[in-house]
Image 1 (tube, helix red, strand yellow):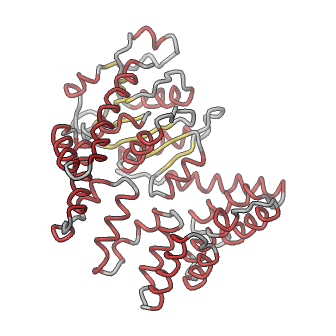
Image 2 (cartoon, rainbow, N blue to C red):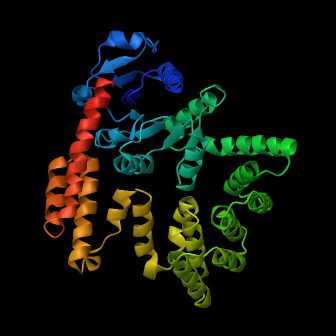
Length: 392
């Protein structure tokens, strides 16, 4: 069996204190290779672990093996890391990363987290967002190493059992933390809401009480959009607790835009047609709880399961799975075929077949020149990687 090893695809800032700690932890368990074109001496100036091995990206193929775990610390590495077919991908995103090229950054981050077995950040809000997208996400703190132990345990679980559930233990700890804050401060818009979110993730019945409390506090604070930001979440909690009819009614109260109104009417029609399972799926999806929606795909009626699976996989950046749901019967119009080529091109780019990706994008662009932006994005990504490799 090949030796376990880690390959680090780094961020531009090598002085990140959390990253330093994580690298030190990884060095304790296996050889660690750091992708860079910078001189080794520059890293010692920042007190990087002495056990680090430095490697050029062009040399990765020679050292890669079936037990290689990719540790990706910037989303622009997504194609470079995925195309090597690592055993697992661990993603770390620092809250302060530059997102000036927002569209490209978000697209790459969505694709990266979708194929990651573990995602970490010092932003609690990002970790919660990833949790709702079905990712195993760990919140790390710059000022404290207390959660570094959870990271170490999560990596150990991945190596030995292929999955990790350590993040659920952190949900319990964060819920207890916000429970303590609430006891000190009393009902509070943010504290009560975050407490309700963690209780919801843990499928705790108290989630509803805290969510209602957070909504009332938001109203008292004069939040004009409290129905959308706070009250709508009640529909997901009610659905989770088995009160689907009430959940649909709650969602309807928040349906102000044309899109939301159409969604509400579709929920009413599903309920009238006796399609409660599909209605429950959509309640979760409309609340951005892709985690719960993904868990229901096998329960959906056969006639629309494939279509809904495709939509959900595409929305969450699971491009390979989305492509697997496409059948020849779906490609009836030129628009269908164009979107299929774009999706196929994106998957080929992830696989590392740039030539095929560009060919598919060019074919799609014959009917819509705007598709050429996909090729421009590939070129932009090459330049971003060059900068990352140089560490600037």
